[in-house]
Length: 316
Image 1: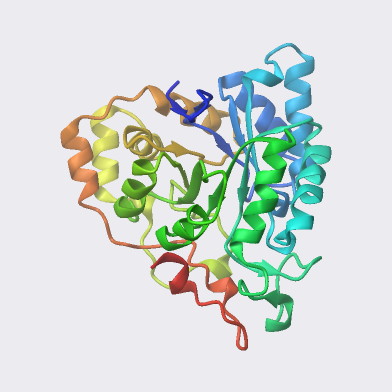
Image 2: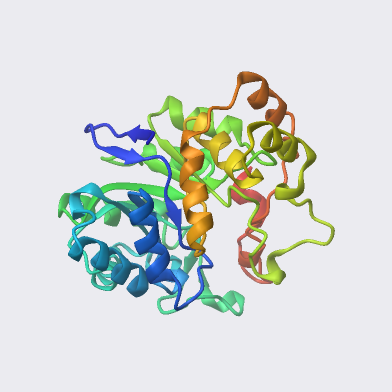
């Protein structure tokens, strides 16, 4: 299994199981079966609504002696309604309670968006706070404190562009150690990836298969379907693997982590096997030509009349 190194020498398994959109009632066994198949990295978040089930899957695997806690890498995230410094640790502790853990391996700021306390999803501009009133640097101070108290071994960000990362780096004691962003052949984000790696910030790719199962309200008319792409399917046929396996292998070959989601036992196994695929440089070059700069998770959910959030500014 490929790993990504952190500054203190810790190694994060590059292939993880994503849990966004995992159906209630199926997540526990998905996590359990993933660990049985060889996964050691589980990515979760309280807003996914399934951390208690994730925790049950981890607990079962540990109790059966399949794995020990120290062999696992568990990532969770701070939701947007807990950006005030005093809210960071209570939010983290709630995730630990749900996951039945005493610490996280990695804790991320989920979005550079601030919601009023208790707001899961905003319904109007009144549900937001500006990043002027609660700056990202304040949130980061709470993240640093969580790490100092041993609640999270590593801290990082998600959905952050270069400017927002610089904002934190210019006013912090501990630099972000990872940035989790949408990344796939239609959106390789090479500039962001290069910046992060230059500054020793690891990168995790989410929605690596194109997120075709995301809610309809997040989809655009006539959007491209990554899994149906001719180039991806041709390379898959040449290697006698599935398109999903090629997309996962592409992410791993770039030196990033990747967190495909599935609750299907066979697809979980297939996704794990992608970590052993050897793509050629010709394969990589051909896939790299597919950069459409197409984003499946646009951030437009945060745009509402009367607030200051503009989706395009998240990425540019």
